[in-house]
Length: 150
Image (cartoon, rainbow, N blue to C red):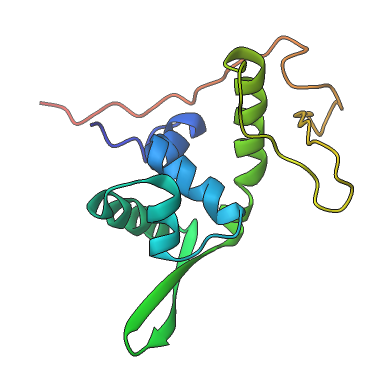
């Protein structure tokens, strides 16, 4: 797969890190309080080699931090960093989209722990106060320098 980390589009860059199912589900579970390898493996039903790979990437990309919680035997846990915590609104927005377009039947719902009310996320443009998607957008991509000459 093409390395997207140098793309001018921030969506492409972000998907280069978070664009696979397992990474998103690991981050969902981390927000739900899971932090240990065995917890992730059991909850997700993911192969250990796949989980090891995804946790390494999420740690390398700064979304999780690996912390030792036991010396004998050596055991680590994975805790959310600021970047990882900042992903929560993205996860909730994805869940809201899924509820609208992929819902039906029995599905996971998210509630505010203090009020008990179901979370219904909405994305707002800070500058205008308008809900994202309610106004036309314009995408401006910077001009990339020409590649090396032959």
